[in-house]
Length: 162
Image (cartoon, rainbow, N blue to C red; front, side, top):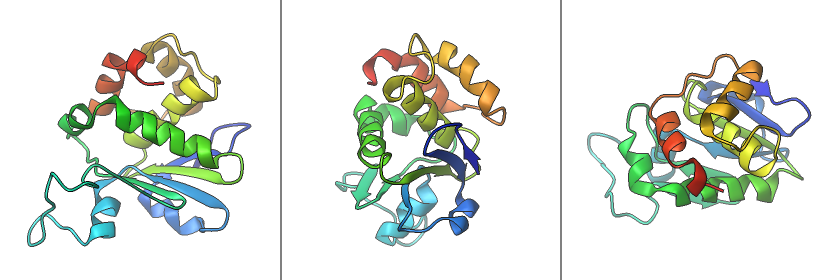
């Protein structure tokens, strides 16, 4: 688990949820695995209805869950910049009173991209000039960052996400 210096912002993997608790933490679950668990969905017998009101994003108390999986960049396009704004709003709501744990399955792409967005757009700790500029600064802190489709999408929609 990585803590961005001087902040309550943490990035990690699904496995690292084991070192967190409900009292001290708020959670951004950027993984389909966790999202499906909320609703009892799976990829075989109980497939989700893509028109379900919580198909992409679900917020409950100190948790926000995203139906995002590695390699499915179409989900970012389908849900649009509003989903990213909602995530940043969620982080803003909790970051003063709780540690924020943003995780994806491996902590390499989705979770760090959300952290990068927050640090550039809201916390003003990274450049907000462009995704590439923020990336160049962020990679010095989190060299494990390897943005896939989400990085490409955020780069194209940089000025629409605030």
